[in-house]
Amino acid sequence: MSTITTKDGTEIYYKDWGEGQPVVFSHGWPLRKFDVPTLIMHGDDDQIVLIGASALLSSRLVKGATLKVYPGFPHGMCQSHKDVINPDLFAFCKAEATRSAAQL
Image 1 (cartoon, one colour):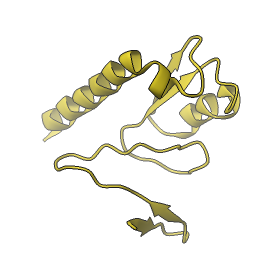
Image 2 (cartoon, helix red, strand yellow):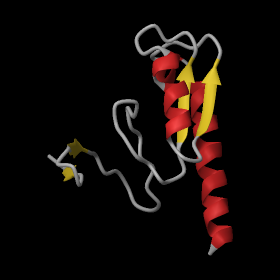
Image 3 (spheres, rainbow, N blue to C red):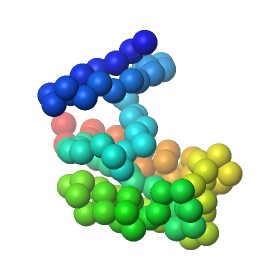
């Protein structure tokens, strides 16, 4: 099993698929400091993880984060609405890759 251990001793499991620039998917609301381009996606009809206690708070805590709220989308929006979520995710990744390349 692949894991990394953070400075505070937290062990995080990960899967590594493919090659190239990494994209990290994190069930991130219980996790801490990110200083990389971060897209926070959340449905405002999530009844499992309420938006106010997660995405809205995280977007204020993560420096430079982009928050994308999906009206009426549920907790499982990445599965139930993948036709909307995937293009937004790809657009964010492409924009960040373009921005990073311009900084070189």
